[in-house]
Length: 351
Image 1: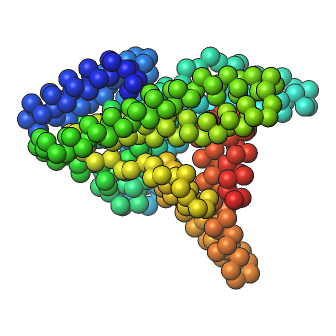
Image 2 (image 1 turned 30 degrees about the vertical axis):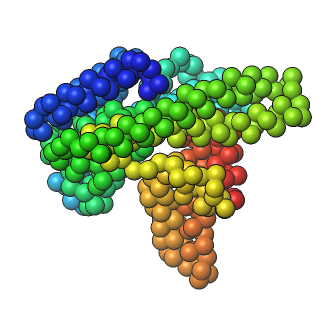
């Protein structure tokens, strides 16, 4: 059930009408049910993966909060490893296995692991990152573990952002999921307008540019000169309109119900520097990488450098570059299981 489909329009109208027709205390159940229904419209069996992420997040966070010392850290590491392992299996198993086979082939050994035909669950990268941010914030003491299982389930599965974000944070989203949102005509109108703009970006711009871009990129050996330049130029707007359009539909649909999601794109092609661009493009992901990867990597490097008694100032600059490089390498790999994405991450970090 893609956003740009008649099925989604019917689904959205029905869920929204029921949402405002039900008592506030029952709305979480409606939205959790609707979110799983929405997710199962793609591949029903993958709902088990989504449900597993919810169960793990709920009980692991409770256990982490109630523990101290080494046990607390061990539970936290185990919970993170379990969430990441699911993502790694579905998204990176064959990529890692192919590289393992290549390395073993260099020394004349055979790869003992079989290649698998794995269907990647839609939205897995997004709701895994959302669950990870919850576990990290609970471990850091920035947010209390959620006691209401249904509210936590809604945090992980909330249908507007389930497929492609924006990636939520527990401190911003969980309190809103507990609030009673009354019908507000002006807010609803604003949300519907934002959805309409999102549909325009997706259907009118992105989907109209895609055929030409795909034709040229899929057969690049047949083209040269102007067609390649035009396709590259069009692709920049296609990928932006596709992603930003989906984000605006999600933000608008959520706004209709009174739940505010963070802005995900802020006119990125008007940025004057690369650094400013990343503050405007896919903001929920770039800030997630900053807060949960770049800064922890930087601080870890700085503590290590201080213990090694390196030259004063090296730990600060080295920590910064280590954090940026680590975040972009992993961010590149997050976009796709190919070395081209890793190289893209390294090149982006170097700029």
